[in-house]
Image 1 (cartoon, helix red, strand yellow):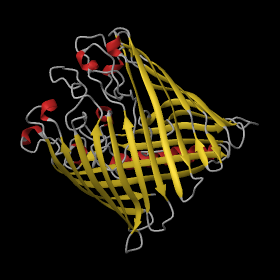
Image 2 (cartoon, helix red, strand yellow):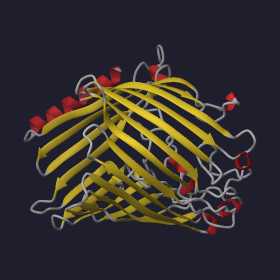
Image 3 (cartoon, rainbow, N blue to C red):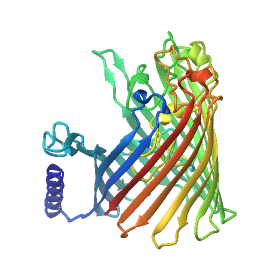
Image 4 (cartoon, rainbow, N blue to C red):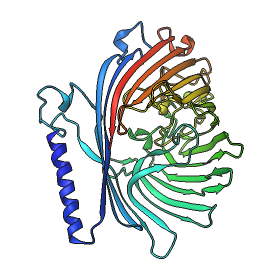
Length: 462
């Protein structure tokens, strides 16, 4: 960790010199250190064929975040956030006598920029401007984030409040810059975003719209979620543009009941019908906040699925296109964990499902500082049973992650947290999934099975 330490010291020195050269800004340092051990069993749902299952065994992960917030005055600040790669003990720089001898060694884990943006208010106005690498997230009330876009990117946003109840946010994000004329590649993705946050007594919502000009080859981008079908055989999959419209909704008018919901529709237009993609999502959750010892929540989610034509190459995809979402209910199949490396989190191939479930959150246990979350849910696919074609080399439906109408699963997952100190929290997570997969769809060796996880770790936040 020598290079990480030296880098942090150098940053503090640079900030200190900048402070002495002008009106001294306030510099706040925050971050976290995370160590997490995970035991995984049968995450590929291949219990009888161990050679195909690369999701088993015991792994220890480690990650660090370091943030500097430099505030000149109430109208101007800058944020610099650094994050290390999610390293595994025994690999790279975390191996015994690792080559390179440090965080950024030859086989090591680098410390890179996660956030770097300027945040200021335009003089004499209520207009706020943010520019730089920052979180670019669409409004979402259920699932902890947007299924469409909830990640960091280079962007510029302007926001202002018209009244106490009505605001406006508009901006542009460059999600991928992939114009390579010499190689003939066109993987550029820009997103023009506008949202209208509305806040009234008892309810709030934020309608939004996104327009994204696309390079024709964006389906080959590994860093973005699936945009075009990707499973149309012998067809032109070149894309041209995409758009999304939607809104979140939260109502606490009937406190202690809180109703939350989201609706979104997205469409990709391609050079041919086989490159088109359109679909929608709806989710809703009802929380009860009248207990002082826990918060129960019932939720329901539906996303449109394939009708089978896209696989045959004679029709468009019926699953909602997504960019880089980070959304989850539960804490195993869809993601949603408090620590790292202990969930499946593969939303790009999971789209096309409905689920209903119950979460019991923030259960106050017998000891002070000890809490529990419990999730129980049933999931079934909305993709037609003919939407998977094993002979299609670019089929983006994946066994064990994508579900057809013939596939279903149960998840039971728990998280226990104990505050050792205000800044130090220990976690224990348990998870169980039972997948009932159709062998008529996926083949005789793919009938599902049981997947397990056991994870424990500590997080120091400062």
